[in-house]
Amino acid sequence: MDYIDELIDIAIKEDIGDGDHTSLSCIPENAVGKAHLLVKEKGIIAGVDLAVKIFHKIDSNLIFDKKLNDGDSVNIGDIVFTIEGSSQSILQAERLVLNFMQRMSGIASNTSSYVKLLGGLNTKILDTRKTTPGLRAIEKMAVKIGGGVNHRMGLYDMIMIKDNHVDYAGGIAAAITSTQEYLNKNNKQLKIEVEARNLTELDEIIAIGGIHRIMLDNFSFEDMRTAVKLIDGKYETEASGGITEKTIREYAECGVDYISVGALTHQINSIDLSLKAI
Image (tube, rainbow, N blue to C red):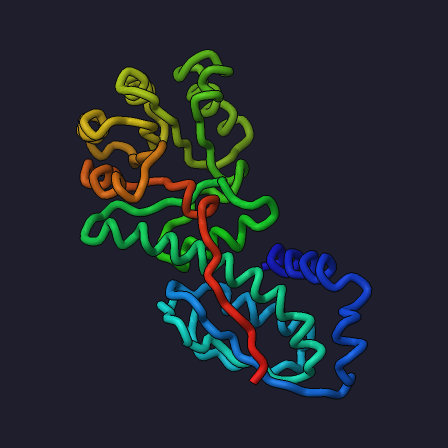
């Protein structure tokens, strides 16, 4: 993916600048070494394939030996990979690899914990656009590694008519019909999702139709169950709004197809990993 390569280039420029002067000043140019990535916290590992790209972007001669794959469960003391070659190159790549992998592993682990809460149900966990600017691609990649499903990548690949759109457009009917006209005029094949804030708005959306998914935002359990019955499989359903680990299973049991959780990417703790010379 070109975007990932560009992201790595930006990260290298940010971190190395005109040179890793610490390594250049005290490590002989021809020195070779070996290191391994040590897991210091239980979770789901993510970013292994990205690490390969980073190491080889720094130095194509580095030898990467993968021990574990993206999505594997890890425990304290596990070795994810070994890297061998120029000591200077390994040191230059060290922090970049750790920064990406620790965050990605944190997101994958967080996502996995939510997915496990829905074991045995058909409801899928969705991410959102609540991501770190510039890092959306890798954060959404981590969600998938953790067992979640990616929602739209950005504003360009799906229509999502939310509360502010409805208010600015002059109501639900106006927002939906204008959207349909826009897509037809511009020959765009984009799915349409519309947010309902209550059962009254849901009735309006169903009456208009011509959409693909309805987001049921901040509904009570009772109203969620009622909404799913009213929709009756005609459209995909997504529950959203303040759903936590304590409430997510009960929302899923209401019969929704998806539950979107912003906390997958914006309320996470990075997993503790360390690159150690061996």
